[in-house]
Image (cartoon, rainbow, N blue to C red; front, side, top):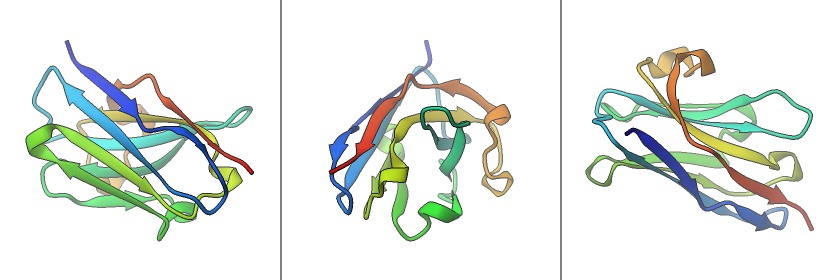
Amino acid sequence: QVQLVESGGGLVQPGGSLRLSCALSGRTFDYYAIAWFRQAPGKEREGVSCISMYDGDTYYLDSVQDRFTISRDNAKNMVYLQMNSLKPEDTAVYFCAAGWVRVASRCPPVGMTYWGKGTLVTVSS
């Protein structure tokens, strides 16, 4: 049974940091892209970042470039999203997802096969 389990969300003040983790299990993900999406209340889901488990190629949404860093640990089947300089507009439920897509495609939601249940990130003073 394939599972993606997110953790690390919480409440943080503006300017603060959080690290999200995505634990992958149930199959081999060596050739998959793992992506982070977020959905804020009343807004559409958007792709934040993704990484190739094969070669480490990455993609970032413009609004998080230079603030967020995605990384992987193939041996542990883990993907991380380090989020720095958080802003109130980063508040959302963050989901990780896995798909057989190229990172150059920006990991569209339609390309994702497996999804986690999400973790809530709230940025507020």
